[in-house]
Figure (tube, rainbow, N blue to C red):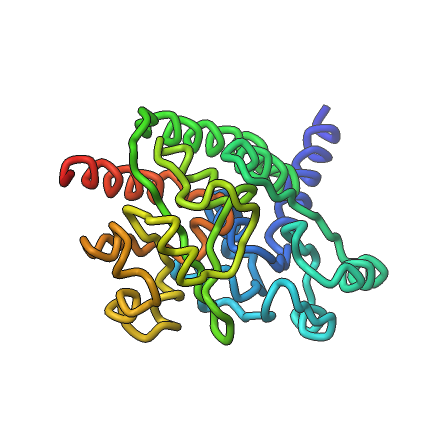
Length: 277
């Protein structure tokens, strides 16, 4: 009996030691914030440059852009496990990592809040944090359900402005479109699919009541005042009333744990439009 007891104690110690020595690289901002929320942030030895939350993750070595991964940069950090969004590229990098004996786990990407629950549970399984993942998923969905969804006659336009590119706007089949629907508002370009270039004529025709941009998008423009200099914006309701909501950089590009907070901001902004009018 004493031998069996000692055997199980050894197994527990060995298992705990293995987890303590885990060296994780996280690829995808949505993936990284979940890893931290599950209490495994201290195991991170690398992250991609879309992983910006929580703030302390910025102290973790950066392996670069998730769609331009470099095998040498990843291997240099000696990871034991790579947890990556399925949209990361190129695929050959993951084949090379597996060939090198590194545990690679791919996390699904989706355009619904339900996809976040799936991500949480997938990552919880990867990290042996199944109970914690279940609690986190329930908390997330309760926050989502608490957001008002009554219809609002408010048109919202999400403008994405990235370095070295022209502005593009989010139509259907995007996270931004789903977010707008979740708070009961209307996508100003609901008849378009995915991201399309922003044109003066298109902006005027869309006539949004609110413009939504990211902090990084504003930074690339220079200042918030530059938003009101975009061609055609002065002829929209948003431009005339200077209605702009600036959100976290990834919040409307990929659903994650910060989504409920952003949806609450967006709902309040849309409700204020109704009050103004």
